[in-house]
Length: 396
Image 1 (cartoon, rainbow, N blue to C red):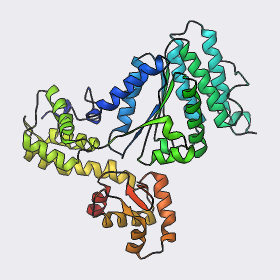
Image 2: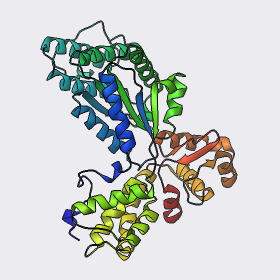
Image 3: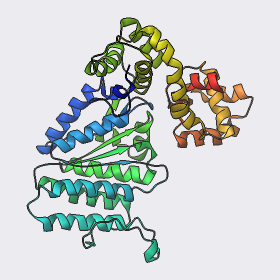
């Protein structure tokens, strides 16, 4: 069929396949927006799951909901060992600009922007020369004395309070969305939890929505023991059969096309219900099918193309980041799990490789930091990427 009309190409659909089956999370966030805007207590939200389940797409949808509700909104992606001040300053700058069009007093907006600028300028190390200092691009005078102590926990509480008060003055709120939240530095995680706790106690209209890998709740809990009371946790998993079929059928119907039952059977078996894979196999099947309905033989013909694309763009790009020692560790995990996504006991990896456990610690720790594996529970390790073990056994 016409590849130009392919509804499974990235960005082609009105509602991407990654949002199929996510109505519960969308509805829950709608309630959060309404409750917070009315001054009622509500917890911030944390989305967790493996890669390829659509967390980032869902995060984008939640941000769009906040914008449609008239909230100020900003989104960042955390990076390992990177300072939080710079990306958060840019995100809040965007959020405050959203509020500025609603606020009757520009001088009040400038006042909060001045506090934000003072916060942002602390991202430059003490003693840095003027030309080496980062300039946040906020065109107002700095307001010293708030959110500029250099202690991220104190500064974040003060900054969030200033921004939330500005939002309350126009009867709306602030939503800060953080992708890859598990990559925040420990001090920044602690500060973020403390700020969320402080604002929830005072019922200020600000919510944080984080998304990250399955071990993110453990990261938050290790930072602040009360974090489990600060956030609502939502596990984003693969789609069940009904939702996976809908993710294929609905976009196709918009182009007056369909799938027969056997094609849907094959697509679910090959994709495992993971939204990223559903989209990849759906796109390839569409391009391979000469006419509608798309049949099982079209899926079989298209599968190698989809798998080759996944091998390069989804699996291969991650595998290439691993060192030889790390690849050995990953391969051992795949062999012990027999290509499944099940967690593996770390001590058995050492036995399998005939190595001392301590000698494998650097490889394991580096893989954890790179986000290729996560600690499923104490003494166990698992892939963050679905079907990664199957890929490793087939291609390495």
